[in-house]
Length: 346
Image (tube, rainbow, N blue to C red; front, side, top):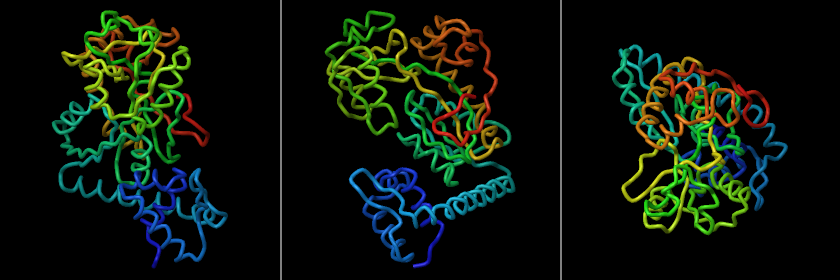
């Protein structure tokens, strides 16, 4: 077997995630297929590249050597593909934008705005619960931009070659509960009002399970935690079986109430990622407009923005939130990820 770029992508994904399971998910393939491919790569090179253990996979000394050569090759090939596709789209009189995103109510408006602008842009969309998987796809050239959220206390694995733009520095996360729940009558729900409740959260969303555990521990609550996708969580919340976190832009159902949590104990940062500033410029204005449109449509979030702390006070959500109260838009924040752990301050 001769090594190809796709084989190098496999090695980089395994090293970056530290897990065959996570790497397979990131690459969009089954884990048995990934394991077979890794064995074939190692056989072709004549030695193991990773040490497999119950705690995950880590590169051998030979693996580190191969990875040091593989990463720049993968990045360069991704750049060639991206630049060629962009040139072909321009020659055809249009522009295709490959978008990845975690869940957000801003997405429908974003796609619609992109399709109706000049020059014509035809977006494609790939959804994933894992922000890290989407960022890796942008770095590999399989997506042009990714709109993701970073949960507080759980820094994303941002490939160093990506550019990031902050849409919202800190978006508060609300709670969804049954419309008939006693706490639903409050404008802001105290965590103490939810003592004894079961919480359902999707543990496959990067960082959310740990963030909720930290929030509950900080409030002195020993609540039962259940795993489930958010469609199931909202259905169970409607009948009083669980409570769950939700984005503030979410619209309530007749049988559910969405309320801010007192003290805003859990938040996320909303980011747009791309390989170049030009790619960010091609997608950011429409995303920004769509997000604040969705914010205005949510009564709970609109009221939260109206009563947020003044500029400069601790806990203010973002320049965008403050500007939204006055009908203004925030200036885009541009920055590149530094070669350090976690995300830097813009």
